[in-house]
Length: 216
Image 1 (spheres, helix red, strand yellow):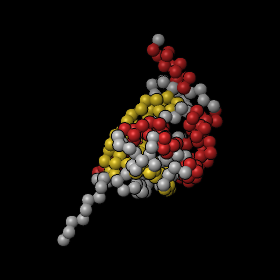
Image 2 (cartoon, helix red, strand yellow):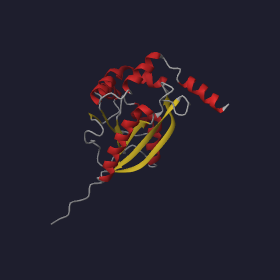
Image 3 (cartoon, rainbow, N blue to C red):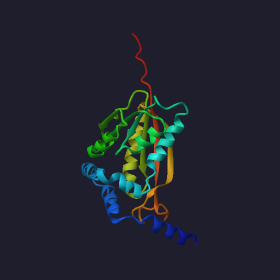
Image 4 (cartoon, helix red, strand yellow):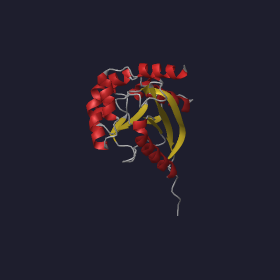
């Protein structure tokens, strides 16, 4: 009985338009970074429509996690939205009162869409793990990623880069929240235990203050 229920859930979760499945599969296929960024550039115009079909929850979850980290009024909080995409997280943060938003992404096509929102103080092209993150002084770092099989290599690389930032004393972890129903799966192989969804993680880090130079 239980197994059959999971199968039905999985089938329902993957009942997506063929175009959505194809575009998502293309960017998640584990291609080399230059090709993956090119695919994201081409996806930018359809991205928000497609992730809506996927029931993509990361923007809401990231904003909720950041709001939890800021019990005080958030208007002056300096935040860096890493891999900001088209600005979906910024919209959620803006609704919650955050105004000092900075963003980075590796795809210029995605950044163009993010610029059109008018919600960011600054946007820069930056590839996580390959280039230093241009975080505002005293700011918070917000990242999200998927935990499905095809993304595990990238997730491991991301977490290694974050661990190195911690080791260097540049960032301090605030939370890493695992989420089961992150978005709808595009195939049975990607589905988490037959649920029809994949899981993901929200990471919140705080930039550590630079210690003052000792005199003499």
